[in-house]
Length: 354
Ligand code: ADP
Ligand code: GN1
Ligand code: MG
Image (cartoon, rainbow, N blue to C red):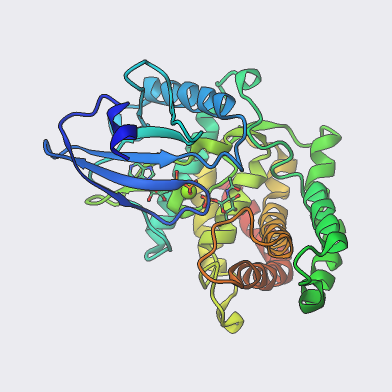
């Protein structure tokens, strides 16, 4: 780690470097120097992001674009370039490392404690999308092709079932049946994107509440982080993924499925915040926001199930059946979202009217 940290022009000598946060993808560390300055050091997951140059090109240009427009420096992440002025450092073993300034005085929530926090995160993600409407989308690399292409996620599940590498298919027949029962309905967003009925926008694509930082005093959202998946996408992806994670009554890996439901009040809170910041949605985009919540939840369940069948090679796990547990919570939540769709449509219409 010392060798890695020497490659970045940090203020002061490093006194600690500890694992930090609870992301499923990168290895994240909090670094502190003897001058009291904090940094975030990350080893980029190159299995998930093989094109690190493309990824870091995106991050450099998106962070620069956002900081030019920020009124407070804490509103945009700041990437620390290496001593050779590169956006990341590649070590002798091929590990790829990047450093950000730690956004001081911020907190990162793992779950919603107050509705106001969810409103704040909604405003931040809505605002992110509104600002990125001015960003030259054609300069972005597609860091994970087909990231929210739901039919493609189903094809990957099908291939995992057919190869049954871990011999786990026999344990998950109920989950496979549930996945298939919603395949057509959750394939609709992708079809609407392909036909051009829904506009492609620059979206974040991973809008969990722990990908936004809040001011520890005022509780106001400061900045959107985890920009690895900023790519062309649909408004409904960003809206839907936030609902999946934040408007759920239980954690993504809750074992007691009776605790997992949609919190309709939080759905309403998020919709108000998102639409207060993101003003340019078309009528069909608005109409399909609830379908986005269903689709992102079901798709995430399909991804967890696929990873379970493939032997847990994608998402970090902390127990052998972690991905199966995560899949079950997502499918339970998807079923509840489906039951509420008419009501959710009414809420979106009411919020869009103001
Ligand atoms: P992953 O892709 O693995 O989710 P993230 O980029 O989201 O990685 O980082 C993991 C965690 O590290 C975040 O949830 C947040 O707690 C923390 N974090 C990341 N960047 C910063 C930052 N610039 N300032 C403060 N905390 C940060
Ligand atoms: C991953 O990186 P993180 O933990 O914020 C994943 C998301 C999933 C999420 C499920 C690049 O997000 O797509 O929805 O886990 N990110 C990537 O919690 O695959
Ligand atoms: Mg994250």
